[in-house]
Length: 333
Ligand SMILES: [Zn+2]
Image (cartoon, rainbow, N blue to C red):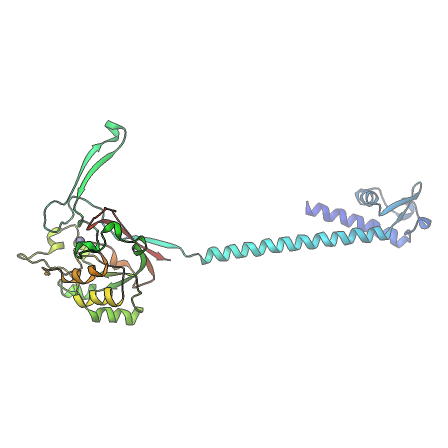
């Protein structure tokens, strides 16, 4: 289309040049096409249509230069508009491409175990049951019925678990469940001592490297203990009446909950109190401050120290002391 238009314009110009060269620019100077050496064609026809070439007498033609100048001015204006519109479209395109490049892409890491009846319960007794209510084959739809302890599998401890008047699961404000995350990795210390408790020095060292734990964050502790999940005897690591797995010291929990005012503390072991604990002293520090816990998490060792968001979605039991939960880390790529 554009090519054809340019070719017609070129033909028009050629015709106009002949008239100018021959001086046929007034009615008195009108000439025949033969004199001008012009053939009848699209160039001449269009100039005639627009009255730039006029017939002064039968078969005697002249060029009206005023009309020709007006046509050229109009064309320049149209070309300028096209350039402005195309330029604006290119700019908008570049802007969209730039915005798309800047939009952070997220990778989601599932930090929870799926629930099965064979998962390690705290005391070794069955803590989860699922019975089949309907099947696709028999009923045309599938449905089941579950019974589960609130503190089974990857679960959330609501502050009401240990604190009188603390939030029950359903009372935790949703904004506390979608928070920036940090991850303190103590796998090296735990490798030497299964009863390892994250201490204040660990957190201070973390902060020196990765910045202060932000207020309202979810502080995760990666111990690597989740690799024993499928084997209860190893996961609970009970010798006599004492369990042995890593947790957090009272001082560390007090610092996170009271000084850094975190929203939650999570760990990849059965409890934020280490295995040998019998009175759950760390729980009693955090829960009165309405800090929730995530226990039996997994894949925490894959997380960076900071720069991600944690989404915690516990089963929303009215009045619940806790409940199985889904938990995700959203990482910028
Ligand atoms: Zn619990």
